[in-house]
Length: 236
Image 1: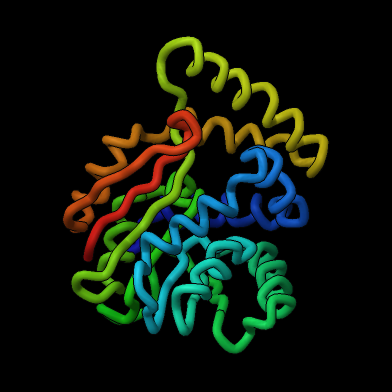
Image 2 (image 1 turned 90 degrees about the vertical axis):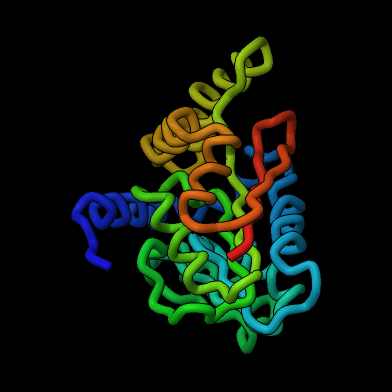
């Protein structure tokens, strides 16, 4: 598959940004989610592997939180991410958890995975698909490297809905998150990007359609946290 310039350029820009904020990334996740993000990752891992599997893939693994959750469901896990800084912290966490022999972290563009067809039993992506220039391509790659019948699961922040709650959520995204993130990380632009990327992203129905377009079957979803989080699952 030929790589186009736009996805490559966005991958480089976004991975550089995440490398700069890596040191505060986990703390911001806990604060932004009210401490719920780890529970959401455990739900994602359980959906991806309802029974024990041999080999799981976590795309856009970042600091390896979801890879660590998957290690409870899989004998071996590969975490893929283009950001060197995020992977460096992820390696430290994997070693600290005593999981170095079971979790391998690989620096690569998740839109072009360096694995053969049907390599993995399941694949996940958490809070990463909206950062990709071509989400359908990323889902297509996940489908390609997962064995037939294996699950592909996506955990993602959703744009605000209409109504009073939606307006309050929009204020939270556009005012509070950039302010807090900028103060903690000294990178306010990174958290303005986060807010903008959520506001510009797809609805749960549209994300389901993107996964279907990528060739995944039986795609369904549930929403969490008053509709601000969606958990999609499809089959390769």
